[in-house]
Length: 264
Image (cartoon, rainbow, N blue to C red; front, top):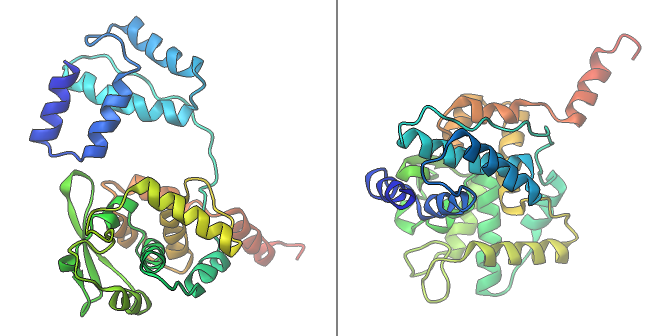
């Protein structure tokens, strides 16, 4: 039953390989392919006993609920209450340090350009690792990104990033390719970014690669960007996903309070 569900998602809905992997990992926690209410409770308890955080459990619960809907079951697993944590981001000085770095070889230039692209576009790491030169419009400063579910969107980039992309341009089809023209591995990129942060004295936040996306989104809104435009840039299917970035950071609240305080 699990495999039939995955096949339909793969071939009928064209979900990505990473989504397929997510389904498989999630179903490892669910023993019964046609679960009862007691099986679903045991599914959650099993994850909690192994020490999974509420956010990690909810990630797998979403996959199981999609499976239950496919089964046409009335059962659903309720989401666990999560801690409201501040989104991990880089600060502006960190991005400036990375931008000022002068790499001397191909691998260094590739890493530098990739990191700047993450910070400048807010794209997911896999979206950029799959990007081809034919999808880069240098004249109009746009990249055509293929996101989740094979959905395409146009994302703008800056003049500064265009300079780096022009200098880095090579003969392979993929923009961020290996020397043999193959797609880079996400884990290899994460390893290299962390090494670069250590080298430059930059604090690498949690979920380092995705933190560039958080940094882009928060600074976009902080500088007066429109939340609807941000939703399109990020490729979010609903505005609710984008609204989490509207939660003003602590330092913003402090700055505003100084202006409006009756005692200031």
